[in-house]
Length: 540
Image 1 (cartoon, rainbow, N blue to C red):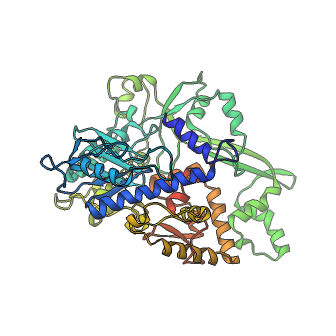
Image 2: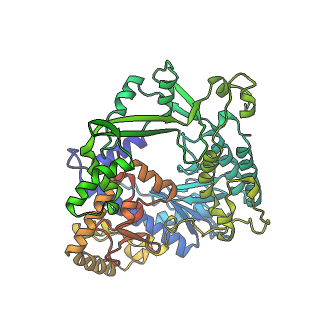
């Protein structure tokens, strides 16, 4: 049902593709929904003293006040005026506040139609940790944990990482910061000393095409014109002459010596004709080829950028040859399916051959997953916790290891209340375009005239050549974002270099501003979370 509803709304907002689409109506739904959320947040925050903690699309997690107005002795009695509140039913605690709010504001359908607006309490939790945007964990009264976001869960996450994170989240949600740190240092020591079971540290690759199709695909180019990356499990299947079929899985581990050594690496050897002989292009040959044309053009060869050298060398290349280097090895299905946790030190004695994983790489993977979790600790110790060698472990007192809140890893992970209450540029465009007044303006305490004035002043200032140039650069960078760029932002807060070259982020309102025009945002409005949404970018 959710997929059907989401698909319909997407089509509804694409009238150029969907015959029954209506962009104005779709935008109206979104804009009214946002105002309704602002109304709820302001009401519960300013009048009832709840604290907004985490927002996700159409709802908010709110920290409850110490006391409630409606109790068993003094309940809220429903009047049956709204969608969810029943006449004569007693509501207490947060449910009393919710029922009162709904009967105060959602007693009729906005702009006519059927009454479908409502507010509900989806769940009451004992603890919540927000690690990054749309990455959080909730502890329920029965001890179960809900995990949201790729930071803490992923189908591709190796078992050794998921096992630690599951245990670590349980400790953090129960406010056991000291025990979490002890567990971190113990686990890192186990990785360092090859004490992690092979099946837990192994990666899994699924066969989704036959080997001949894979080989043919490696010879095609990406949208950017570069060669496609090689996939380790397919390369291992080719190297070991495995008879694999669609749906098979191959398990493997990285066996390199450095954290920078990927599972598979492609080195492209390029050749040019020198004195009638095919010669591989290296630094000396490149200089020999390009120096004469640089002298002819009055250019200094040493000042050529690498990108320019590559472009100039293209005309000399007569042949290319790819060398594939594998820094990984297959893990036997017997090890994966064994009831016993087989360690590297045991593999050879059990007849599986020598197996030794890349310690530096797996420690790096481990630490990259742990860093977001450290948002729970004070900034006084946060940057001192991570190590790469057990000999360098740190020691903290229980007082130092107490958990904190309100100290995000990245400024963009936490909104200000003021920014949350102000309509985005696209909302302003809709309301002014349709000539409608947004609902709940007075109830929220918004200065609508001020918003309109600021919006019009901003639009007027955008009509100049410099702004148009910078805005085009920004939009081009947005449209060039790949799925990898989006995932890096979603998981690690990393803004693509092509975007950060044009704009800077203001941590107070979480908007991008042009570097060359510091008081102006892009034409999108510049909201970091809207502009870097996967729904607004083109992916490879």
